[in-house]
Image (tube, rainbow, N blue to C red):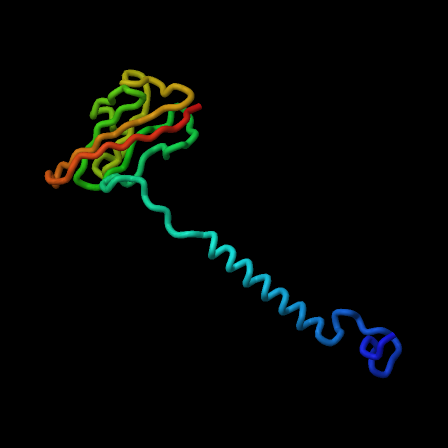
Length: 152
Protein backbone atom coordinates (compact mmCIF):
# COMPACT_ATOMS: atom_id res chain seq x y z
CA UNK A 1 0.00 0.00 0.00
CA UNK A 2 1.34 3.42 -0.87
CA UNK A 3 1.90 6.00 1.81
CA UNK A 4 -0.40 8.45 0.00
CA UNK A 5 -3.27 5.98 0.08
CA UNK A 6 -3.10 5.33 3.83
CA UNK A 7 -4.54 7.55 6.52
CA UNK A 8 -2.09 9.33 8.69
CA UNK A 9 -1.86 7.43 11.94
CA UNK A 10 -3.74 4.35 10.68
CA UNK A 11 -3.40 1.45 8.32
CA UNK A 12 -6.83 1.57 6.66
CA UNK A 13 -6.77 2.90 3.09
CA UNK A 14 -8.24 6.33 2.39
CA UNK A 15 -11.43 6.26 0.22
CA UNK A 16 -10.64 7.19 -3.39
CA UNK A 17 -12.84 10.29 -3.30
CA UNK A 18 -10.86 11.73 -0.41
CA UNK A 19 -7.43 11.20 -1.93
CA UNK A 20 -5.44 14.28 -2.77
CA UNK A 21 -6.40 15.85 -6.14
CA UNK A 22 -9.47 13.65 -6.84
CA UNK A 23 -12.09 16.21 -5.84
CA UNK A 24 -10.28 18.91 -7.80
CA UNK A 25 -10.14 16.71 -10.91
CA UNK A 26 -13.82 15.75 -10.64
CA UNK A 27 -14.86 19.38 -10.15
CA UNK A 28 -12.77 20.49 -13.10
CA UNK A 29 -14.25 17.72 -15.29
CA UNK A 30 -17.83 18.73 -14.37
CA UNK A 31 -17.13 22.40 -15.13
CA UNK A 32 -15.56 21.60 -18.51
CA UNK A 33 -18.51 19.34 -19.39
CA UNK A 34 -21.01 22.06 -18.42
CA UNK A 35 -19.19 24.66 -20.51
CA UNK A 36 -19.14 22.20 -23.42
CA UNK A 37 -22.90 21.65 -23.20
CA UNK A 38 -23.62 25.38 -23.03
CA UNK A 39 -21.31 26.04 -25.98
CA UNK A 40 -22.91 23.26 -28.05
CA UNK A 41 -26.42 24.60 -27.39
CA UNK A 42 -25.36 28.15 -28.21
CA UNK A 43 -23.68 27.15 -31.48
CA UNK A 44 -26.57 24.99 -32.72
CA UNK A 45 -29.38 27.34 -31.72
CA UNK A 46 -28.92 29.67 -34.66
CA UNK A 47 -30.67 32.98 -35.21
CA UNK A 48 -34.30 33.80 -35.52
CA UNK A 49 -35.86 32.25 -38.62
CA UNK A 50 -36.74 34.71 -41.34
CA UNK A 51 -40.46 35.19 -41.80
CA UNK A 52 -41.74 33.65 -45.01
CA UNK A 53 -44.91 35.73 -44.80
CA UNK A 54 -45.25 38.89 -46.88
CA UNK A 55 -45.55 42.28 -45.21
CA UNK A 56 -49.13 42.80 -44.09
CA UNK A 57 -49.77 39.11 -43.35
CA UNK A 58 -49.36 38.20 -39.68
CA UNK A 59 -50.32 34.52 -39.75
CA UNK A 60 -52.25 31.82 -41.59
CA UNK A 61 -54.45 29.07 -40.20
CA UNK A 62 -53.70 26.21 -40.30
CA UNK A 63 -49.95 26.68 -40.49
CA UNK A 64 -48.29 25.40 -43.67
CA UNK A 65 -47.74 21.64 -43.56
CA UNK A 66 -50.02 21.09 -40.55
CA UNK A 67 -52.21 18.01 -40.03
CA UNK A 68 -55.62 19.22 -38.85
CA UNK A 69 -59.19 17.90 -38.54
CA UNK A 70 -61.39 18.51 -41.60
CA UNK A 71 -63.62 20.93 -39.63
CA UNK A 72 -60.71 23.28 -38.81
CA UNK A 73 -61.05 26.92 -39.84
CA UNK A 74 -58.94 28.18 -42.73
CA UNK A 75 -57.85 31.76 -43.12
CA UNK A 76 -55.42 34.45 -42.10
CA UNK A 77 -54.75 37.36 -39.82
CA UNK A 78 -53.81 40.55 -41.61
CA UNK A 79 -52.42 43.81 -40.32
CA UNK A 80 -54.83 46.73 -40.15
CA UNK A 81 -55.65 48.25 -43.52
CA UNK A 82 -55.94 45.05 -45.57
CA UNK A 83 -58.84 42.91 -46.78
CA UNK A 84 -58.56 39.54 -48.45
CA UNK A 85 -60.14 37.06 -50.77
CA UNK A 86 -59.64 33.37 -50.06
CA UNK A 87 -59.88 30.25 -52.16
CA UNK A 88 -59.53 26.71 -50.89
CA UNK A 89 -58.74 23.93 -53.35
CA UNK A 90 -59.77 26.24 -56.18
CA UNK A 91 -63.13 27.25 -54.66
CA UNK A 92 -63.44 30.98 -53.98
CA UNK A 93 -64.98 31.73 -50.61
CA UNK A 94 -67.49 34.62 -50.59
CA UNK A 95 -66.39 37.51 -48.34
CA UNK A 96 -69.52 37.19 -46.17
CA UNK A 97 -68.42 33.65 -45.22
CA UNK A 98 -65.03 34.81 -43.90
CA UNK A 99 -66.55 35.52 -40.52
CA UNK A 100 -65.27 32.77 -38.23
CA UNK A 101 -62.64 35.16 -36.89
CA UNK A 102 -62.82 38.73 -35.65
CA UNK A 103 -62.81 40.74 -38.87
CA UNK A 104 -62.35 44.00 -36.95
CA UNK A 105 -58.99 42.62 -35.74
CA UNK A 106 -57.99 41.47 -39.21
CA UNK A 107 -58.90 37.80 -38.70
CA UNK A 108 -60.56 36.36 -41.78
CA UNK A 109 -61.41 32.72 -41.17
CA UNK A 110 -63.66 30.33 -43.05
CA UNK A 111 -65.32 27.36 -41.38
CA UNK A 112 -66.87 24.82 -43.73
CA UNK A 113 -70.49 23.88 -43.12
CA UNK A 114 -74.00 23.53 -44.53
CA UNK A 115 -74.96 26.35 -46.85
CA UNK A 116 -71.35 27.46 -47.28
CA UNK A 117 -69.12 27.47 -50.37
CA UNK A 118 -67.48 24.30 -49.01
CA UNK A 119 -69.56 22.04 -46.78
CA UNK A 120 -66.62 19.93 -45.58
CA UNK A 121 -62.88 20.06 -46.26
CA UNK A 122 -61.78 16.93 -48.05
CA UNK A 123 -59.45 14.52 -46.34
CA UNK A 124 -55.87 14.65 -47.52
CA UNK A 125 -53.90 17.55 -48.88
CA UNK A 126 -55.68 20.88 -49.20
CA UNK A 127 -54.27 24.16 -50.44
CA UNK A 128 -55.43 27.70 -49.76
CA UNK A 129 -54.67 30.91 -51.59
CA UNK A 130 -55.27 34.41 -50.34
CA UNK A 131 -55.01 37.68 -52.14
CA UNK A 132 -54.78 40.76 -49.92
CA UNK A 133 -55.69 44.24 -51.06
CA UNK A 134 -54.87 47.43 -49.15
CA UNK A 135 -57.80 49.47 -47.92
CA UNK A 136 -55.90 52.38 -46.34
CA UNK A 137 -52.56 52.76 -48.14
CA UNK A 138 -53.70 52.51 -51.75
CA UNK A 139 -50.07 52.90 -52.85
CA UNK A 140 -49.22 49.48 -51.34
CA UNK A 141 -49.24 46.56 -53.75
CA UNK A 142 -51.62 43.62 -53.50
CA UNK A 143 -50.01 40.35 -52.51
CA UNK A 144 -50.85 36.69 -52.90
CA UNK A 145 -49.89 33.90 -50.53
CA UNK A 146 -50.44 30.17 -50.99
CA UNK A 147 -50.03 27.36 -48.47
CA UNK A 148 -51.00 23.72 -48.10
CA UNK A 149 -51.98 21.52 -45.18
CA UNK A 150 -53.37 18.03 -44.62
CA UNK A 151 -56.82 17.32 -43.22
CA UNK A 152 -58.02 14.11 -41.65
